[in-house]
Amino acid sequence: MKVVNLGGDPSEIYRPDVHFESGKPKDDYRNFKDSPLMERVYNTYLQMHTNQTVDFVQKKHEEYGGCRLRQMTVMEALDLLDNVVDESDPDVDFPNSYHAYQTAEGIRKAHPDKDWFHLVGLLHDMGKILALVGEPQWAVVGDTFPVGCQVQGSVVFHDSTFHDNPDVKNPLYNTKYGMYQPNCGLENVLMSWGHDEYMYKVMKYNKFTLPQEAFYMIRFHSFYPWHTGGDYMHLCNEEDLRMLPWIKEFNKFDLYTKSEDLPDPQELKPYYQGLIDKYCPGQLSW
Image (cartoon, rainbow, N blue to C red):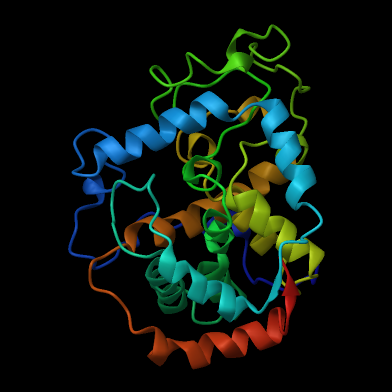
C-alpha cells in the first residue's frame, strides 16, 4: 500500500457539524421502523442473520479470495452497479451506481485536496457486483457484524432474526469473545461476508496504490454496530481506534448524501476516470 501524507491529525478529521443538502432530515436516515421498504429490508436481514455463520464466511473467503471471478476495469464494474438495488437499504430504491457518485461527490466537496478519498467514495460499494454473479443479497449487502462471538445489542434486528443461526447455540461462539482474544484487532476478526470484505480483497490483490485509510474504510464501512453503535470495542486494538475517526468521517457521506436528486454519471466520469488511472488502472482481477 502506498503511504500518503494525509495532513493533520486523523483524530481531528471527524466533524459531526458538517451536514448535507439532501432535503431530508438526518433522523430520517436508516429508518428501520416504518420505512416503506421495511418488508424487503427485514427479510434480507432475517436471511443474513440466519445464514451468516463462521463456516459460511470461511467458505466465501476461499471462494473469492483469489479474485478469479473475471477481468474488468473499475469503470466497467461501476457500470454493472446500474443493475443493483440494495435490498437492505431502507432509505433509497435506486441503482447503487448513483449512490457511488453521490458519496464521491460529497467527499470531493468537503475534502477537495484528498483525491484518494474521492475515489474511496466511488469504490466503496463496488463489491456489490457479487449480487450479479449468483450471490443472494443477504451475502452481499447490509450492515456487517463479527461471526464467531456473541451478537451485540446494536446489530440491526438482533432480537428477532438470529434464532435459527446455529452459531448462536454453539458454546464456542456464543460468548462475549467467542473465538477471539481481547483486543485482537479487527483485522483478525471474521466479519459476516459481504461487499466490504470482497472489495477489500480486490484492492489488495490488484495492489491499489491508495493509503491504508482507504483500505480500512472499504473493509469496515458497513460495520455500523461498531462505528455507530459503539459495540465490539473489546475486540479493537490501537490501530482500530486510530482509524475510527476516518470511518466516521466517511460514513457521513455514505449515508447523508443519499437523495432522489440523481447525478449525471456521464458528466462526472472523466474526473473519476483520472483517479482510476492514477490509483488502480487497467484490467483488474475480480
